[in-house]
Image 1 (tube, rainbow, N blue to C red):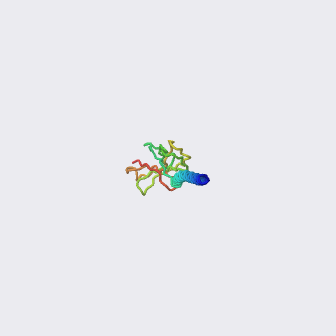
Image 2: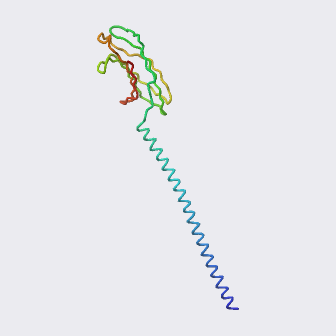
Length: 176
């Protein structure tokens, strides 16, 4: 009977050690699963942050190198002219500018020219524009002052409206 008790005691001890070992292994596996889950969460956060960084870099690129979607939608010059005195002539002009972009633009300048050819400027004017908001359409009624030049009385004359932002030409409209 002592032998049976000894075998039973040893069996209980072995089962206890095996159970403890299995609990330890289970605990280690649970810790590893928790760590993997935490790593997966971190990887997802990293991917999300990388996506946000890409979006911010693209936005910075847009701000540093903006693309303007601004156009002169109409340009007209009245056929009749006015004489304020001397050899000067004034031609009334109407220009419509549309900002089709998503951003407001400041510092636009509208240049108006009356030319006989590329090398012969007959008259000009310019208009400094305030802020042109996204989606805004602006109508400008102004004039081109020109000197009377008999040499161009029967030759083709062109009227040019040029919209600039700094040195960059944004749009140009020519009437012949």
